[in-house]
Image (cartoon, rainbow, N blue to C red; front, side, top):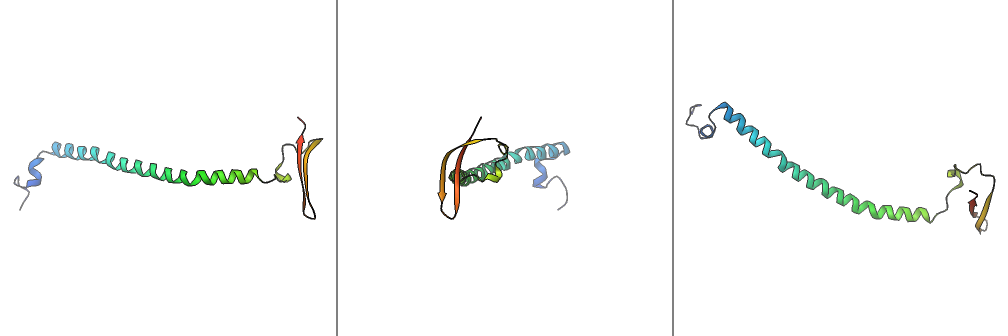
Length: 104
């Protein structure tokens, strides 16, 4: 069979402008379907990530608040002239924990 006008695929679109129009319509209709699927996939992944990270963040913050802050990271008040000790805890032969209050 040749490229005559009797081919069923070419009967619907016979002119080159109709072929270009047909392709452009197909390309115009194609991305929204895939973009909707892509958008649903991104939303699902974001929901899963949030569901995993929110409890982990809460656990880390509560863990950090329950520990004393090391003196080595206190740079802002390192040259303070005086401080008032609010509370102290002495763990014998191990450590001394202080809760200072800086003036100002």
